[in-house]
Image (tube, rainbow, N blue to C red; front, top):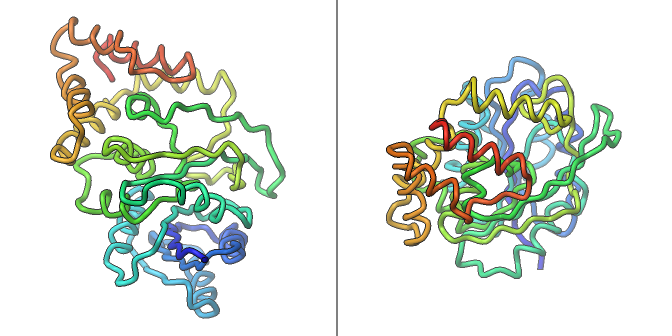
Length: 306
């Protein structure tokens, strides 16, 4: 039986690539697809293109909003999805400038279906980097442990690959987060914090376009990645990871397991003494597969700028 899927797409001045992305959505195989689009105050031809598709395809619903930025636009989409009378089997985030393979959604659903649907469940996928013309670029395979502890160390969840069940939508939509860096990191952390299951697919189902107007991109060489890490630790640290952890503790306090609540409480107090810093630094639960991530996390804790 085909599953009902609602795609949540935020757009902003995306006239250059929006046609290709919408076509790739409408060509998804073996699912019943609806698309909820929120335009974030575009000033180019994006809205006229979206209206053209909406007129032709009744499966598309369009919301015209003010410019509030990508993360808040996706947050609004989450709450709009919860307001709908129709409840979908699965939900997916979508950017405006990528290109989805025809089996993207059904591949994710087939993997999610084996899990207990009474818990919040999330699918993540590897991306395939491409240039503006969809020519393949060299892509580094993402290696992650899919643990709650790791989610507090690094940002490793790519929103445009995410597919999740109704239970997770209800969890993330029950209230506005008191703090969050990006919608995808927050959804990933909430899922793991509440004992949900995350599946990672190493086989790319999305062509992740790299171009000069990307809000966020994935193309970095080793030197660029190392430089960005150093800048974040020593120059631009605003304790994003710490604030995210405290928001999880405050917003979901009653739903956290004893283990996860204790972990977040330890993080909350880590900067009060060197002993507490060392307890975090030597906690074997904080482990990432990338050595640079392990080291940078521990350096940040040591210097009190986690």
